Each structure stands twice: as structure tokens, then as C-alpha cells.
Image (cartoon, rainbow, N blue to C red; front, top):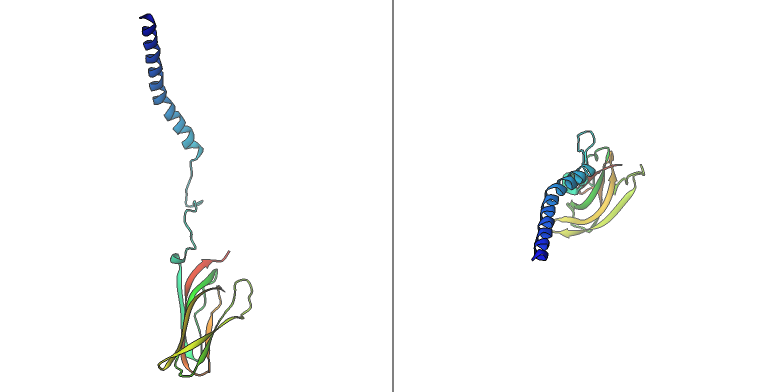
Length: 164
């Protein structure tokens, strides 16, 4: 009987010690961990937590119209224009070719070009598609068609990213 009494006393003491540790230790451990990973997010030093160059944040559509060729408005300085798709339409019934021109970032040289075949549809020659190209800020992409002299327009659709 004495053995059972001592066993129960030991088990009770162990249970009491476990309950005391349960109340004291988690708070101390939580306080230690909380101070170890505390982050200060102030306006002067913001914590980056999202992609600021995500396509949905800065969409841009550049368009132009003219006779034979047209120039879009300029891409804002400090940004690179990421072109995702284009469309060209010209009033022409003969097979035509459209040319997209742009200045790549960091080159300062106007000279990248994409030639696309325009398909005749009724009284128009049209082309469009998706591809990725990068145009430097401060420059203005332009479009021209062959044969020259046809009323036409061009549309560039994409988004802006910050230039490092």
C-alpha cells in the first residue's frame, strides 16, 4: 500500500510540474521567438511583399494611325515597355507586309524590327499576334506597311516595368 501511495504522490507531483511548465514556459518561449523575428515596416524602409512590376500593375497600350506609317506616343522614361501583343490593319487589298520597329533597352540604337505578313480580309490587310519584346523608355515604337501610302493603324499592348 505504501508503494501505491508513493507512486500516486510521484504521479501527482509530475502532473503538477507539467501544469506549471505549461503555464510558464510557452509565454517565455513565445516572447523569445517574437523578439527574434520582429519586423519593422515603416514608410522609410518598407518591406517588399509583392511584385511591383507585375503586368497587371502597369498595363500600357500604344496605338497610332497614319498613311503608310505611324509612330506611337513615347514610352515613359524610367520604364521598359514589355510588349505582349500587336495588331496592324491597313486599307489594302493586295498582300502586304507590316514592320514593327522599336529601340531595345540599353542600346540607344533604333533598329529592332519584326516583319509580319498581313492577310487580306475584305478591303483590309491585317496581322496580329503575341510575342515578347522590350522597348526602352523615352523612345516611341512605330509601324509601317508595304506597299506604302495605305491608310493604316497599329496597336501595341503590354506593360511597364521599372528600369533598374
